[in-house]
Length: 237
Image 1: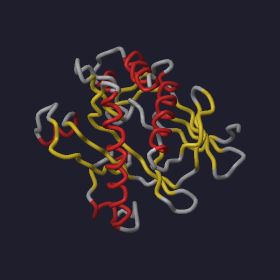
Image 2: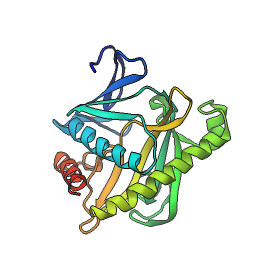
Image 3: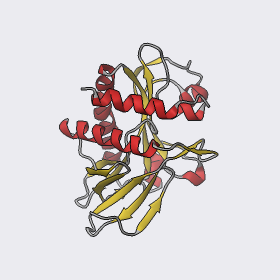
Image 4: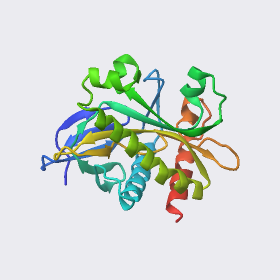
């Protein structure tokens, strides 16, 4: 399967058509962005690490009944997957308070939440990805029906119920993460995009060390080493 026309370029991936209208190829980039694109850099090998991590996690989720766009990893930086109609809602799943949740609501950083929090953001860079409630999502036409929003929440919690204990066995706290969803050719809502340290927060359960893109956001350094460590723990079955 070969990539053909470039149809989209985002912060972390390029998207190409293939000779099959129902399949696309994502190229994982080494670019790094934070704060809605205000901070930019790159890290050689970062894209390949995210592709490999996402591949393993999509396989794990598939084994546990979660449908996604994933077909297979083609090489270090390329993934073959289904074409979907993207739902322009970022689904944020939080187990521990940090980042914007602590900043906006005054919850002390590192507080374990009494239950898993699921939030919606509008996937719109020009507006800074603002928070959404259900009525906003329906008014904007991001989905047609309330039950679709309910399904996004339900799937997000199911994914968390798989990933949180899985990462605990790897000595990592799954602090929070962002999910994206789309509709396949049959209209089914499925998981898309990636699951990697670019859109998850992982804290080492012993040292508390951050093993994700916060190392770039906060200028901590050692980002590639942290991503490599996450992949090594995943592969160490």
